[in-house]
Image (cartoon, rainbow, N blue to C red):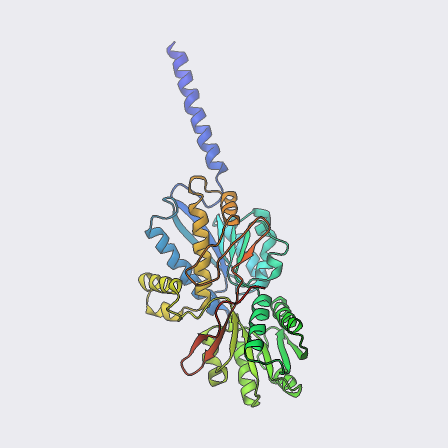
Length: 400
């Protein structure tokens, strides 16, 4: 009798151990009883590091804040960040390291447009929940990728909406329109918005001038648009390129309305361009980081002061805001899955997002079974070189 009891007891213990082992083996990567590991691939070296470093600060601000509030269902968030130098091949290597070595659960930042395209096959294969808040391209969601959620307007959407509003509100229909754009995915999306705006306005382009990625001298490109008589120029550069174009336009004493794209919504562009940036318009989907009337901006600013210093607060820019919205969105889905914290559950909850608000930082966010981009209503900004700040030139514009 005792032998039977002992055998039954051993069988029971073995069964429990097997179930526990099976449960551990079934858990998705990055999830333990007390920890949740998340990853980010961003540029921390080279010129784009001005974007990546500030995003990294915002991610760490959120990490400390969410952990101070008890984490995700009692699990402490642990963020692992990899530098891709804004190079697609390095983006892939960084992602593989996060998957194979760090065993991440999901991605909370995924570098630039081309960089994300290079990572997408792995994200799809591994079914990794990923939030894209840095550079949104139509190829990221058309067709939709099951686990990738994009927030904010594409360059095409932002340029089209802002350019139409600017031309109509300022009565610039009689202008001669010119475009300087980069020969890559980014430039193609900028040109998409330019073409769409002119088509919907019933206007024509006077000249479109491409340039190679990495270009520093824009004297030839600016001279071309000047000779074409352009009085409205879309400067489709990123950071240093936009500043160089603006200075060249000023040097040539061109009297032209200048519209830039949101990578130029950085104080670094104003510092590099100096007075040449004054009056430049910017197509974006978030307000200036100095807009203290926006409640969400006040919250992330206060948190950055709390966990870092005035130096980091001063370095904040538009990508701090988009990163903050991204982590808030992900936190909402994670909290909805605390009793079943799996990648599949988080993807399901993100897909069910309806009118997620960010206290005014972005337009409300809604996803659905075949909707993987949202919050794409644009806002037009204007540069004030004398104050070194950007100002609102419109409220949020229609996404149509």
